[in-house]
Each structure stands twice: as C-alpha cells, then as structure tokens.
Length: 615
Image 1 (tube, rainbow, N blue to C red):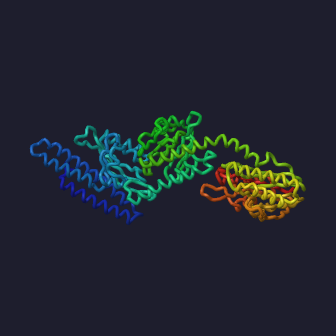
Image 2 (image 1 turned 180 degrees about the vertical axis):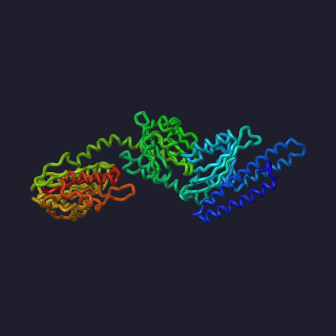
Image 3 (image 1 turned 120 degrees about the vertical axis):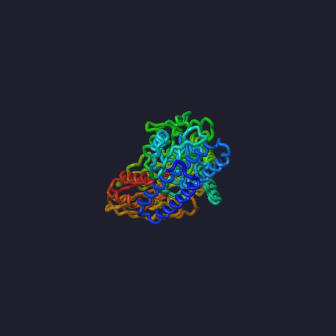
C-alpha cells in the first residue's frame, strides 16, 4: 500500500469496493449452498476496506501537517470534508471507538446494520452490543490492538434492536488529530443476520407501528386491571404471580418480584425466559438477597422507577458465586419499578430484544402502582380469610364413616376461593346416603349456601327414604331463602348393591368396571334454587363386587393446564380405567396425582372426588 493514496483515487477505490460488495451479496443470495468461495472473497474485501481506512488515516495526517502552511488552510478543509464524506458513504459498517470501547462515530451502514440512528449508539459502550459469550474475547482483541498496533480480524456476534448478527470484525488502531488518546476503527462484515421479529417494537418505527405499540400498551393496562380486580386475586395471593406471567408473556424475558414482609424484603417470584435452560440461574436469583441488589435498594429508597436501556453495570441486580447475576441472565436492558409500597418489580430483556424505553418505564410504573393496590387489598382480606377457612371446613366431613358392603374414600382441595363445594356420607332412614355438590358462585355467601344445602340433605334424609324427595324439599327451602344462588348437587341412597341417585344439574358419576371399562351414569337435571318446582334426574346404579362408583366436582374437569386445555371427562375416564380393581383410596389418589401433573399443581377451583367400591 502507498503511504498516502491520492484522494481522487481513494474515492474511486471506495466506489469499486461498493460495487464488488454488492456483487458478493447477490452471489450469496443466488447460491446459498456455495457460501465458501463467497466468504473467502468477502474476507478479502474486508482486508481491502481496512487498507482503505489506513490510507484515509494517512491522508488525514498529511492534511493536518499542512494546516500551518501558508495558503494551505482551504485545501486542508476540503480534504477533511472529503474524508468525512468517504467515511459516511463507506459501503461497509465502520465504527470508531475510543480505548475504552465507547462508540465515538459510526457511518450510515452501521446504523442500517444495527437498526438504530447514528446518534443513539454514540457515547455507548460497544462491548454491550457483543453477545455475552464473546464479550470477553472482544475486550482482549481490543486491548491487543491498542497495545501492539496490529490489526485483529475475528468472527463475533452482535445483538441489538431485535437483530442478531454474525459478523467478521476487523479492529485497527488509529491516531486521530485532536484526540488525546488512540482510537480504534472497527470494520464489520455481516456473515449472517437474523431479522427482527415483526411483532417486536424497535426504533425507527412508522406511524402505524407506533399506533400499534400504543394499543398494545393500553391493552396491557386493561388486561392487568381486569386480572387484579378478579375476586380470586383479592382473596388469595394470586395477583403477583398472575401479573408476572402476563408481563413475561409479551414485555420481558425475565420477571423478578421482591416484596416487603414484616419489615424485610424477600424474593417472591423469578420467571425465566420460556424454553431456555436457565434453571441454575433461577436458583441463584431465588437465593440472592434482594437488598444486596443496588437497583432494588435504589427503587425502594427513592420510591420511583429506573430504566437502563443498555445494561452497563452487571452488578445492578447483585452478585452470586458464579459472578454478576445480570451477566448470567444475559441481560441487555433492565427496568425496575416500585410495587406501590409493597416491593419492587424488575423486568429484564435479553441482548437480542429491543431495549426498554422511557415509555416502557412509565407503563410498568403504572402496572406497579396497580399491583401495590391489589396487594394492600389482599392484606385487608387476611382476617376475613381466617374466618372463611373455618366456614370452609363445614362443607366437608373430618373423616368418612364405614358403610356396610362398601369402601369409601374422598379428596377435597379448597382452591383459590372460599369453599363452595361439599361432599358428605351420612346415615339415612334406610341405611346410608351420600351427597356431593357446589354452589355456582364464590365467596362467603356461596360457602354459606353450600353449608345450608349440605345440612338440609343430612337432616331430611333421616325422615325420607327416597333421595329425590330430599332433593325436592331442599330445593323448596333454597328458593324460599331468596339467595339468588343455585346449587348443582347429587344425592344417593345405598340399598344393598344398588344405589338410587337424584341429580340436580350435576356431572354424571363414573362406573369403573373390573375389566377397566368406564361408563358414565346419566347425571343432568336442573340445579337447585332456580325454580320452585325441582327438575331432577333419577336413576339406579347396581354395582357388582369390585366395581367402583366415582363422583367428582366441576373444579376437577374444568382444571386447565398452561396452554388452556381443560382436564375433561375423557382424561378422567383414562385414569379411572387404569385403576380397575383398586381400593377407593388408590383411585382418588390416582385422580389427584394426574390432575396435579396436568395443571402443574395449580388449583383455581375446588376439587372434590368421592369413590365408593362394592366389596
């Protein structure tokens, strides 16, 4: 290379380089299976680009040296102007950074590659754009170039504004006039680009995209308000987990919630990115002391949120034995807001996601304020909940009695609301009877109606020898009370090996046969409390030895999994078929375990299963 290329020749060389790069891009698109020759040629062009930059640097130095010469000022200014134009029009991305890696200048191609305006990146550390796994290697290359002056070329990966780029990067040391320290020019040749997700917001959006983003923010607030106003969220500690899942679905990769409790701060929720192996990091976050995280302490003390569009301090969320937690999380952007006066909510996005903005901060601060109000409401319900739990115990027996000729077992899970389901086994005028049902509602009123129906069935069964007559009289009493609530129920009287059933809107019982077959009774009828004239469904079921009759609540079959699928009677039948010949305790346990696995341990509505086996 010549010591200083003529500026006209430099312009010409840059134009030719642009044409050759355009041809290489076309070859890459036309022959995707033959990337080897194209890559080798691209690397050669990268060397050419580096040489042109070195030549431009030499010309710049020479121009500066002539500034003091008489009559040379105007020529020098023209040369500097030309060099700036060459830098801006250079056909490959070029970044000029200082010795600390802070971006000082970028050209237009760099802005196109990274999807950001020129001014957005200037003044920000370039290493934050480098994939976390390759950041240390980049810093080593940068230091080596600064110390030795030798050009370094290597492959790395950048993540910014929803784009992920595999690039060949060349670093060259520069000594620029007017700069007290040495600079580094980085020339980037894209090898592979992952386009941004169209649904993910990023800078430089059209008016239509901005309107869509505003609509998404409004939708989040509306959904959050509906979630927090749900009665379940006001009576059980569900508001925070539900809100965290909602935020993790669209707005963040990591969600961390720290709540205050009796004067201390404890970590309540850690939600990692979906379908990514972050189990070990989750445990580190769960074990970390919240107040050891500077950002948590800051938000709590100042009672206002903060946003870090690009995480420059990996210690913001604290330190573990493995190093900075944010580094382990792959954090690229972070925001943290107060949860009213009840804690701190922290959201983190990975490097390949667009960073949080001030608009996002305002949105999540509003979410945090709503969450704070919901947690305060939950606290005010605590004393009432204790009284309600005592009421709930009145809808299920402490233990089941022994029924001659039968074995019996049951399970009861109270769910997220006050007890509205019941079951019972009790003596009747002609032997033994049982009942199962639930009020169509939630809260204390539903539980009181349920207790009333259960008590009425027990009392009336001591005089009546037909369960249907018992159901009809309880219906009349319920209508007369004028509660406005209705109850789905089933009552049965045992007569030898036959069970006479009366159903008022309840699910049909399942008969488990000895060979594993499962058939369902009729069920049906109209729930109690709707009309003064009861409309029940009566049937008789005869059980052979080792056959089992299984009753279940609405809360069982309406249980949902993570994808929204319901448990349903088909799945119940599959489980029961595998329990043929087993004792009732094993049957209800099998159903309980299967529902628990299906719903991942979540119980939103009460779950009741009652099994009677003929012996």
